[in-house]
Length: 162
Image 1 (tube, rainbow, N blue to C red):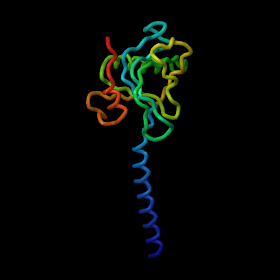
Image 2 (image 1 turned 90 degrees about the vertical axis):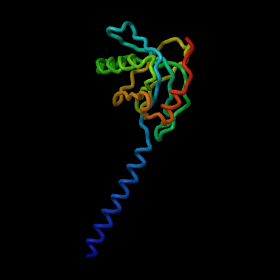
Image 3 (image 1 turned 180 degrees about the vertical axis):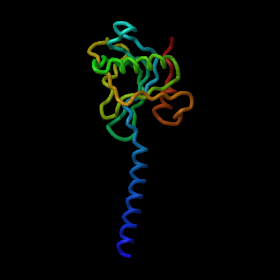
Image 4 (image 1 turned 30 degrees about the vertical axis):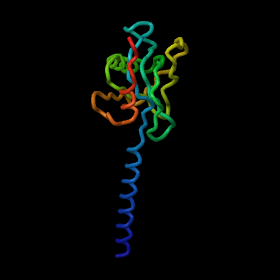
């Protein structure tokens, strides 16, 4: 009887700890950046790019844990291809290009590894960062995650005058 009660208590404690852990994990966002893409520039060409400039408005992760993001900033990221994963890099770069000029918000990179350097709009492209392959790109269209702060803030950020 005592042994049965002890086992039952352990099972209940384990279940409660799993629920608490799962709730905490759900509050953590491991995405390194959210972006609303304005344009994508392939270098040296679009047929076999080795580098890419991704221009737009970015909200970068603030710290290695949690779900805090910096306020949106306009600029661009500049990446070089990962030679051992060139096809995958180019596929993701094409996805960025397809989102350019739309209201689609792209989530990319891993909070632990970052996304490289966000450059100011008047910075000259030089020394590209290695492309931050993580677990693919997330795409948020129309009302997907509309209330999530980085997505909401990027959608509200004024468009660049043409």
